[in-house]
Length: 298
Image (cartoon, rainbow, N blue to C red; front, side, top):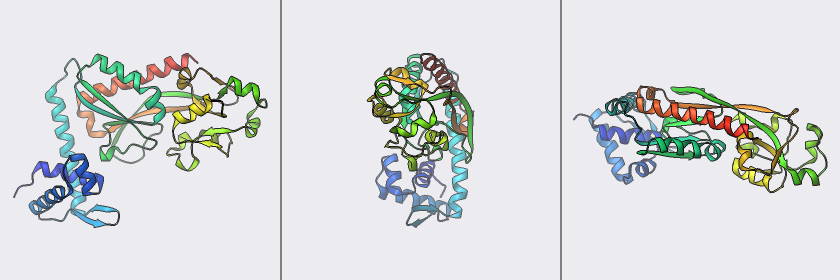
């Protein structure tokens, strides 16, 4: 019995989700059907592909070998579909972008809207998560990151630098003890990330300027900015977010000026897709231009 490609797609999904139920949700199949499809593939290959463990479904040695070939086949099919569609004038279909919530909230909405204006048949999904997007599990087609990934077969390109400064409302600065230098910050309520939930070293802004205590913390940039806008304390903000929060003021700009970078991360095999290449180019240009525009307003 020859392996069935539909069963291979089920296998790839179970390998990424590590559970029948998780794979079933993505595939819109009940877990029992997913299990039968895996059993059919194992029978066709005459090899066990998974073992059940407390952590879920774990690949056997045979499963690991099949995963490599299955992902290569998946990438080849995706590339072939892109080649068959040809270099059309507009992009179509669905593309999902994973991004940290700062860029997801303040850059991607307007950038993606402009891309959709130019490509009416294109659907763009923005996956905003306060963690690193798992491209190997196909959570997204591509991701915006603030550091270069060190694992996986990924294609990484730098998009743009961006600036961050210490901010507070004018009212807060006028009604609290003056801040003349970095040392004075220790006498103020600091707003920032939850320290043990910082998923990327590049986001540990307050530690970089010597602040140890975070009195008001959130894993969301948007929540932090709302707290700052309400005059609840002092924090670090992306310059590109400040036009959306006109009540916030930068200060200590000579002493504290941080620079970080955005990177576009993709599956290495996807560089063979003309469709994804064109979208990646439009996205990178859009983000770069929008950062420059918004920073110019601050």
